[in-house]
Image 1: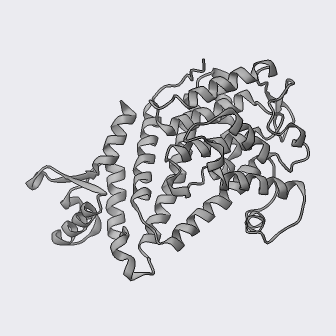
Image 2 (image 1 turned 30 degrees about the vertical axis):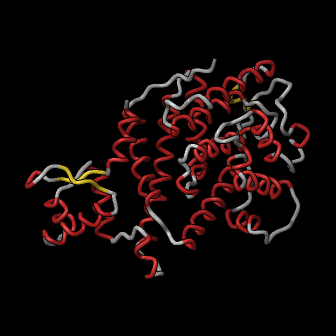
Image 3 (image 1 turned 90 degrees about the vertical axis):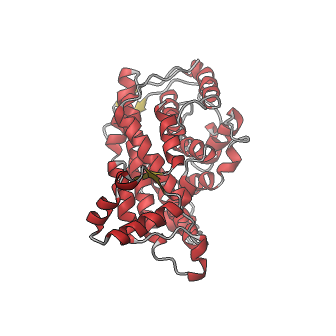
Length: 354
């Protein structure tokens, strides 16, 4: 039975806490449909570009954008690879059964990802039946040797069973663990990297951690592919996933923080005044307050007045507004009053540390 080895260290817990905080802000924000659609489309294009680029696709982000928008109908391997991966990300609901991952649907996912890539077409949706070596793309040296093909069906059965019975672990860690273990098994002749990243996205999606479809986690890997591969290699060498999960959660935190910043920026420039009552509209000062609490854990009226350089009444009004939005909660009374993240985020954080 699959049982991952890792430690809950401070780096991992702090990263998860930060992800929960930023994710909570994004979830509570309500962008107008036009802006919501723009962020989803941007994340979709960036994710497809990044994941295919990691595996050596040379198309630029602009090329990928044109392809996915249907303005380029050329037929070649690189463009077909992008279209196939884009199809899977756009149709994630096809690849789970009421929130459960199944072998049949996972094989369907791989079949779609490799559908029009000639080298993989014959093997699409089928576990490999031979042994393979995974080589470095630059040096062509063997990077690691996956398990024998004889063990692949059993290892995949164990992994899928673990995914569907991992409710006691943070979905963030589940996604990271599955990402690594899938690549370690390397169950297919080709397309393993893209399938691993698509499966990671699927897990976050069905567990409600895809931040409304705004997340571009693959972009972090592509920005520094060596760091990505080195983090995976530490688990290969030690059989301990701790360092990999530090890397994975840190990448997740960078991505979700970037999304949070963009969402908050868009909320301050909403073009539809008649929608104001339906949205979470934040001013620059309120964003500064949120960032301060994220860094130091709490804030007082005095600290608010100091960092914003405003009157006591004005700082009080900003804090009161954030309370009404249910972003922060007031604690204490009189001169001992301070403000923290709302109870929902605190509860999630305690569950992670438990």
